[in-house]
Amino acid sequence: MRWVFVLLLIVSSSLFFVAASSPVKDNVDSDTTTSVGQDFHFAPPLNEVTKNRIDSFFSEKYKHGKFNGTYLFFRNDSLVSGALGYSNFSTRRPNNPDDLFQLASVSKTFTGVSFLKMQQEGLLNIRDSVHWHLPDFKRKNLTIWNLLTHSSGLPDYFNLPVPNGISPNQHMYNEDVLKLMNSLSYKSFASPGSYKYSNTNYVLLALIIERKTGIGFRKYVTNVIFKPAGMLNSHICDFDSNSLKTYPVQGYMNGKVYTDLPHNGTTGDKGVYSSVFEMLKYDRALRSELILNSTSKELMYSPQVDTDNNGASYGLGWRMKVIDGHKWVYHNGWWKGFRTYFWRSLEENKMYCVLTNDINDWLPTAVMVSLLN
Image (cartoon, rainbow, N blue to C red; front, top):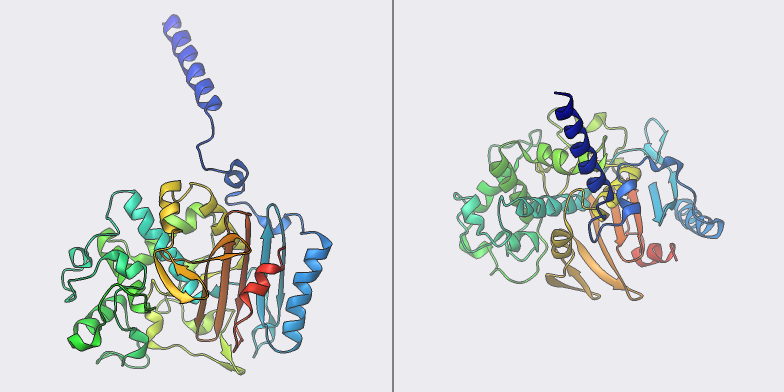
């Protein structure tokens, strides 16, 4: 028996050598791969000039009442982060870079990634008819691609009355949005094909995932994105289980806090809570092949429809724009006191995330891009 053991040992050693000497997969930055899930709190700071430029920008905005929140700017292996103002004006609790903010429409990027993941695993195709996955949906002329690119012609459920039977103290859910669309007359819908931003699209996308996986949209995103990326505190809100008022960071407008409302029960279009440091982990995971392979990412970041907004395009859950010859993929968001920004330069390995909870006006995104130069 000893010779059998020796033979197995030799074979095992040979296999280990082959595996260890195999080249890194194409299109994967080895430095990025090793940084996935890393604690970036101890990352080296950006050079003093860049750090001062960034900190001064936000200090000036804060001084004039134009910023209240957190920020993180990353370039290669260095970063600068900060927080100004209050997460709760009643308790005077200061904002902190580890605080979880409602990401608003930045949440749509997680929905887009989820669909590319499902396509990558052969669970569906983004050119599938929506009717195949939501057979009770009366609109039968739409594809998943139409929903992902905001080219469905569906009206925004935000602009419609809350369905009958749902009181101001109750939440509406993704199934309720489907029923709401089914209740509308044909004249309520535009012809599919042209870009028209509508939150309804991403609620229905989340509903497709719920029905397809049977585990719920929140759990699916947690399993395929949050956990692999090391985003241990990020989650999709469930105010039925944890009420909005228990969150440390509250959303304000003109000093008045936003209270809960029926629309806070829907997911896919908004609802992700995360911090600037965990959004950096999200960025690093997407630069590797931990979640999506290079083919899926290339498709996701490819312009699909023109938004007619200063040369910007919409991909599959992401906006994109070329600035100074470099392509940026990004999404901004607004929801009940929160304004959010998540911008990534894929070519230059740069990103910034800015999360605010008491801002009436948008911050200048192009200026924030230039802060990293």
